Figure 1 (cartoon, helix red, strand yellow):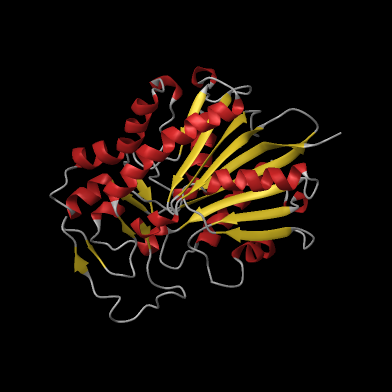
Figure 2: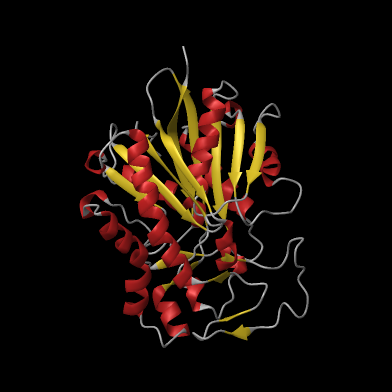
Length: 344
């Protein structure tokens, strides 16, 4: 009998350091608490200490999951690690995670570099591994420490991003269809609109790249810092996301009103509300879940799913649309027939 993939458990970890909206308003007095809240919908952003890497957050999330009894390291056949802030260029961080977590050396492990669409792509990869018989239990880990890329005087990004890691366990099930279909998209022309220019092979970091400059909006950053062209990202999102939602419903042969819950990448409240209205999604079916952690890049969707399940808003049997979009440009969407997750 053919096996299908299903989500068995989700856990996440937020580093203890916190930057509140009140703190940011004090640093940037031209932006009030009310203005930041209305634009972002975020009250707190968790920030990793300077010596804490994405792998450290990933280990904390995985150990939390293992302690819950939902999965043991010995069961894992494959580790997928999504990050844009790896420990090293090489070796692969997923290999280091295998060792640190005590996962058997018979397991496969790989990194993939994607941002806000990364969880959707990870589900597709994990499903492929399971449904082709290459693995029975896949650990899909998403983790970022974007805070390391943010210039302290750049309010355009400091008000939005937070650090986090999420771990999703996917297992083989005997029957049923949990995932799919999928719709993906890529437009590399948008790459320069959300970018860290230096530090890799294309452009090295130098004393000149570390010189700060002020943009037209008063934000200060260097070439070593994360740059985000907010208006361009907003325009791209409003164009791409409604199209991917329409393409997915058409591919699945369903109507929009048959979907029980929409879980989009939690970019910011302003953008999500514009998308909700443009696509005509009822408020009660649209999940917004970023107030206490901020935009955690590839971890926003699994964090939102975990919280919705814990709060009773997401129940077994629900048909859920997941949509990721952002840096790359990259986007992806899929449908999940929710089967429930292990309690922790």
